[in-house]
Image (cartoon, rainbow, N blue to C red):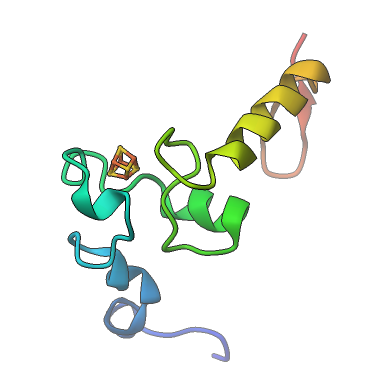
Length: 95
Ligand code: SF4
């Protein structure tokens, strides 16, 4: 079936495996004493906000990209969107 691969193949080739351990980490994570506690933060969040999955998570105050997260938080606070639960097939507004 096109677009499908055995899980063992996916695991062997997935680029996310590049993020195991600490060797991949940039500064400031590389020299941070929390690097083996939070593992540099969220890779998905780093990619979504910076375009670089190997960047320090912008949620971290030590990240050189933290201003992106701070701006997003400020924008959300200034214009809060209604909370909507995600469901397959239908979004249900809360309240
Ligand atoms: S994300 Fe922040 S706290 Fe975590 S390892 Fe990197 S610099 Fe340290």
